[in-house]
Length: 533
Image (cartoon, rainbow, N blue to C red; front, side):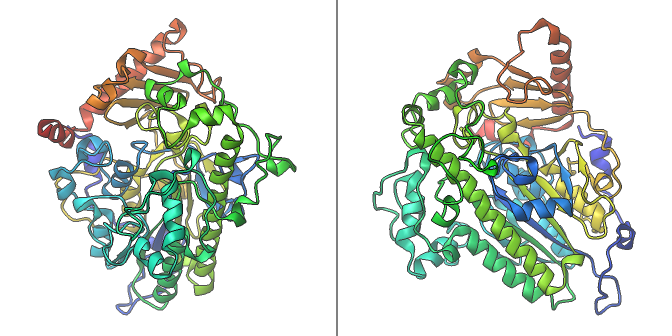
């Protein structure tokens, strides 16, 4: 049921660390100290919304600088375009169909029985830290020595939600949270108080700059860096930012960097923000649930109001850019802390995200749940990796990689000893691509939710409507049909070629790839969830 390549990843990989060009300290046992690893992890960051990607508006000087020092993966993808399964595939090295986690809420025996990445690091004498929202469950979330979440159910008594209220800013944070939820966050004293939502989940925050969720992650990560710099024990840190995920509530400081008074030729060119090219895409082009949101059926997003008054669109898009710029500032502070602590040259730095955001493309906000698991805005994620001493730095690669590949990649890079695994790792190491520019030779990649499976290749993308949930059926999902996009001629993904006979052969090839994927990657957990229902 598993490919030979997946099975081989189980073997302990003991490449000498010195072979990768890092000069490291000796620990007390006179063995070479392994590199630290820090994953800077945004939530819902559209890959194109960064300065070095040529974006006409957004300001990301620190990410731009990091990219020049790193290898940039242009074609990195999430395994599902929603939070929990995407994050869980990163931490487990297992695809969501095997975990049985294809939305945010499932719990299965497979999830309890995996050996998560944090546990492997801990077993290899690393100190493990997680700061910010993790949004993983069960055994996938094990192995942390220290963890402090944004969410109170992940760190009861020590979460950001409780901390910000203790600092006297509970009301200001409740106003932010209510922009999407209409009340304060759970476990806060404002959780039962009705507060107006914001159109498109957008409003300007009243919090001080050092009290935001991003600041919380940054402060704790910097404190950890300063403390661990004195240690002979390496660290593995997952530093997660809540944004630019909704609610879209940036600080005024960052919002003021973007002129949203009118559509213009781009802020970088000295004007106001540019209108997304597919903002006015015809509704009939997009899947039914997305059409429903465009019609205004979701009373939080109120997208229909934004079409009547495009100032709402500009406010929303400017707010997203402002949140990205705040994250960029936080990334810069963390990188500066590594420099000041003298450990930048012994630390692998990774910047990525769990999935993207429409940011107005296709006339949509956030990720829209059902119907989105085909679009590049959601599936293509940023991936920047700085590996000290790497001769490949400053290069870009178009190799197909994914979050599910991180686990085997880090095992290979660091020569980590592996425990016995009940479920073989399903990702593919891209260590050779990162350090030597070697091709991965991956022909296709599959991103799969409960209702939609997308096959991605170098030139094409096929989104297939698969067995829908009851929730999906009310949108008459299958009648909409499949989607096929030609990457070179349709970068906006607005021309569905599924019925074009010119591409019949290519469509059948991609369908064959999906059959290959499902034959190699078992749906153990998925079937467990179906039986429970």
